[in-house]
Length: 206
Image 1 (tube, rainbow, N blue to C red):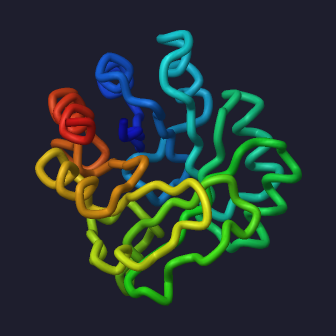
Image 2 (image 1 turned 90 degrees about the vertical axis):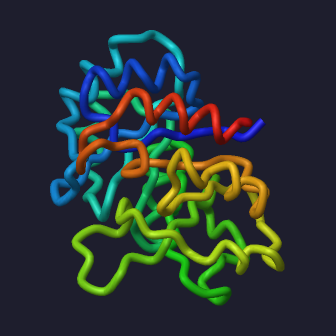
């Protein structure tokens, strides 16, 4: 069964809907330029609403060791999703001892990673458009056909422009073992829609 991550959760309605829908992962964005940014203390309060449930993933963009440590002091995360270079991702994994999802921007076959580069999981997202203020969460879809000849070197996640209307096709065409959505289940930037969250999870697994 395809696994599902709902990312960019920043309020109780979105968090509760993610849990109730049976998502495998819930993502908290710790990046000030994102409309989905949440303070670590607020994310900890949301996480405390339900014991167990989805694994907690922290999305982090080029943060220092001190900044990551401060987040983890507030909220024990299960996974770190890193938007940075491979060397920095390896360092963070060694420093904090948590599984790392390394985000890779994709627009052409040459962008596809050929090895894990020290990461536990690769997250394939559409490459950020020129002038974008954030590396992901831009509601952009990359050409899934470039994955046809790609030999995944390990666990991977499909992201980028997914929504309840296209995720079933995405899974069918790519064979993605896990899908990640953020803006595709929102009613406005940074505002999660509980009904869309439920519909996305159902479609991904249908």
